[in-house]
Length: 196
Image (cartoon, rainbow, N blue to C red; front, side, top):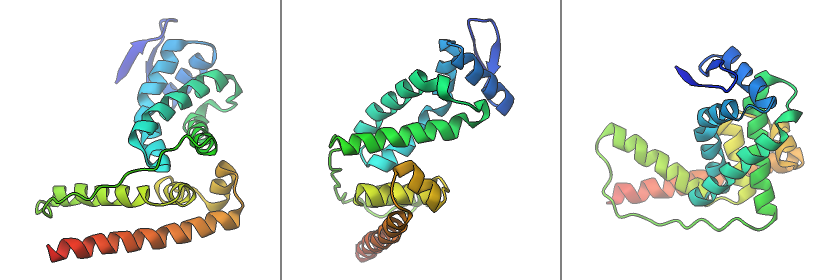
């Protein structure tokens, strides 16, 4: 798939790593069109990561915009054009952490729906994912962020500690408590479903 041409006339195919590196290099040199291509490619990933970390879909949209603005402003600091996605992930998580520190995060509201249990396997999978999202939203910020980074992003405990600026023991504690809470919430939800 070839995206729109950059102003320099170079077409950037964003499907392979070399093309992404070229797009990053072009964006680093001030090429807005190349950066827009990178935004289109990574927007869904960043927004999903932020939504899972902050537990609020509306706020995730706003924070995604902030993350990409910060990425554009600090793109000159990126040293390895092949490490754009991990670099962007760090920026996105820092945006969430900053928002929480400022007290901008609203408490997520969880509503129980009275829908009948799904009978279609695809619907079952969608409902299960929704249950997990709802359960994640009920965790504290620290627990949710640590669980999402450990299991969603496959980050190690030291990596999570560095990104969230927490002691490694706190990260481990957040993960253990978060998983215990998730198990309880999902088990209770499953039990209610079986009774209906």
